[in-house]
Length: 161
Image (cartoon, rainbow, N blue to C red; front, side, top):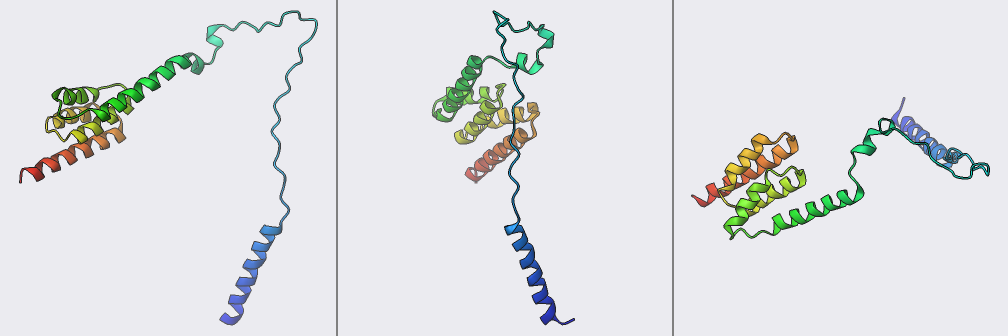
């Protein structure tokens, strides 16, 4: 066949498919209906909920800390991260505090401590970062620590030339 026949036929077929998709009737979405609740009866003077044994509760509900504790942990995390980022590197205690935070149980605080080590540009943070690299089990954290070590090594090699 000739190209002068094939190309217009393909374009016409494509136009028909697009037109059918645009002008096809749309189905209304299926409404989500909540299951019916049993009505309260007048014969029950006091509605009491059945007492559940602790073993019947979902384990997720028991393992979550109370909202107040979660909020307190979040506030502590934010204040600690802000504190790590704002430490001045002129203070020798600041570097030791940053290095101590590399062992914090909270991953967000450890990440902030890694970033603070890079910002401090102090040679004594490299051994602490290497220890943190050996102790870490999270692959993303290991990569972040290795990048920090590489950056600090390159910075010290450039200044020693």
